[in-house]
Image (cartoon, rainbow, N blue to C red; front, side, top):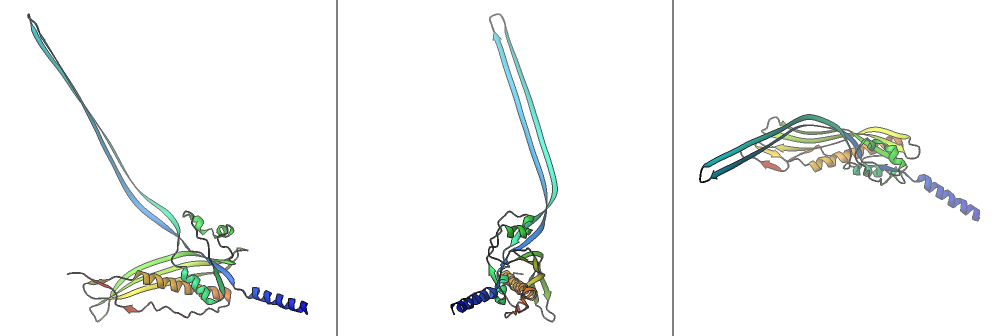
Length: 267
C-alpha cells in the first residue's frame, strides 16, 4: 500500500514538472546605425616680437667737447596657419530598452510560457551585442530554456500634414513603425526554435485649423508601437512553438482621430 502511494506521488510530481511551461528570457532590441558627419577646422596663430636699443655718449672737457648717439631696432613676425576638413562615418551599436515590456506581457498572456529576467547588457557598444551565443554561455539568462533575441531592421518616423477635403482644416499624422527580426534560441543546444519578423506601429492623428499647429503625443505613439509589437511577437511564437493558442483580447485602437493640444501662432 505504501508503495502504491509513493508511486502515485511520484507520478503527480512528474506530471507537474511536465506541465510546467518553458521559460523565456527576452533581450532588449539590438541595433546598428551608421553615423556620418563632417568637420572643418581652421587654426591661426600669429607671433611677433620687437627689440630696440639706444646708447648716448657725451664728453666735455676744458679743451674740447663731443657727443655721440647710437640706436637699433628689430622686429620679427611668425604666422602659423592650418586648415583641415574631412568627413567621417562609423557604425554605432546599442540596444533599445523601450519596447520589450509589452513583449514580455503578451508572452505571459498567452499562457504557454513563463518569462525570466535577463541580465542587462552593459558592455561598450560594439558588434559583440549580436553575439547572443556568447552571452548565453556567460550566464546572462539564468534559468531560461529559451532566449528571444531581437534586432531592429527598420525604424521609420513620419510627420505628415494633409488637407481634409471639403473643409478648411488639416489632419496632422505623427507615426512610427518599428520592424524587428527575432530568433528564439534554445539555451542548451543553441538551436533556433522559431524565427520571424514582427512589426509595431503607432500614430497620433490630430485635426489642425488654420493658423495653428498641433503638438503630437509621442508617448502615445511609442506606447502603441510597443503594444502592437508585443502582440505580433506573442502570436508568432505561439504559432511556431506553442500550438497557436494565443488570442489577443485587447486590439489596438490607435487609428482614431482626435483634437489635441493646439498652439496658435499670431498672423
